[in-house]
Image (tube, rainbow, N blue to C red; front, top):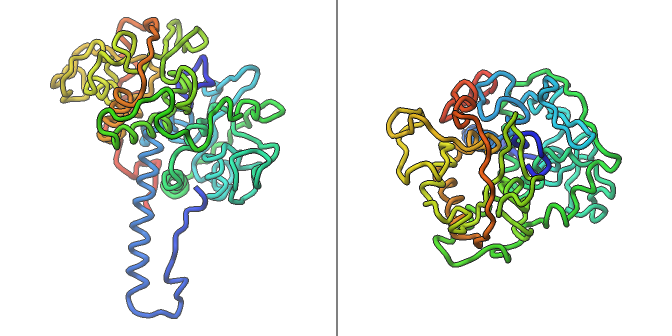
Amino acid sequence: MRWLSSSWRACGSSMVVVSFAACMGQTGGSAPATTTMASSQGQTEQVLRGRAIVVSNACGDCHGQGGNPAGPGWLAGWKSPQQDFPIGPFMTRPRNLTPDSATGITRYSDRQIFNALRFGLRPSATPDVEITSSVPGQGNHPAKPNYLAPTMPWVAWRHMSDADLRAIIAYLRHGLKPVSNKVEDSQAPPDFWASENTAEKIGPYPVAPHPTANEVAGQGDQAKVLRGRALVITKDCAGCHGGGPNPLAKGYLAGMTDSTGEFKIGPFKTRPRNLTPDNTTGIGRFSERQIFNALRFGLRPGETPDVEITSTTPGQGNFPAVPKYMAVPMPWPTWRHMPDEELWAIAAYLKNGVKPVSNKVADSEGPPDFWASEYTVAKIGTHPPAPFPTTNERAR
């Protein structure tokens, strides 16, 4: 994320379930049972949609177990100082997202969680009300907001649809088993990060329409390009690659421009690449298939042929026996769980919806095995993820 210089990857209004049996108390016959069954099916679909978003958006990278819902401590929050995120002099700690009544999210309403995801407002410090403005002091948005720590990517997630945010809440509330794990409060400056969340720094809400001065229109399948744009924004690709979730920003997706953009992983320095379609310094030299393979399999486009990969296991099918993976700040182990059409849409937007920018980024450093030891099944889980429900989850 844009706030993290030394660690890898950062991490709706109430879900309304209408019970016709309750609303129509005197009604007889089979209609209430049928409606309840349909309502139950809708809840299940919403929970599963929320699970898919949580897994593919790397919530578990900070809150526990990466993209592996079967892993111990899945979304149960901070458990040791190794999970601290230092931001300047302040130490921030990922919260317990399970529905434990004492230490997890059950203390908060669905609306409070929605307000956290859409407006970045700390649930424990924000009333259970519908927020009517995104500007502090306007409408009923707090004049002095108590924001979540900036490691939480709400500035990108706020651009998700209401339905997707409600699906996330439904999964956290109804699809997880509660885990008792009290997390120490994060530290924060006196303004609770307000100076970091100005419109100048995080961009407008809603996002500026396509095309901005950094984008182009009329190339490729426009529906696919616009879908890819929405995904690139909500996944906060530009949080590392330049400009944040704001296509108006200078250097949007053009890659690292100075050493402040580096990520230090042990002894190695990794550098976010230029994702614009410049033919010399960007991704213009790669096919959409090579970009797809990078997002699904983590394979560096420059060292991977333009072919359909037939396996996820090194040495099996045509998967390289000695793969050259992208550096670990790139969250492909969770993005690989996105549907094919979403990965293709991202590739289409980067190739056809963004203006090329000439910006040569120095190669990232890495170990001799090109990070293969970090991408074992034991460390990143299976693809596809274990089916719902795992031992950490519950079905209704």
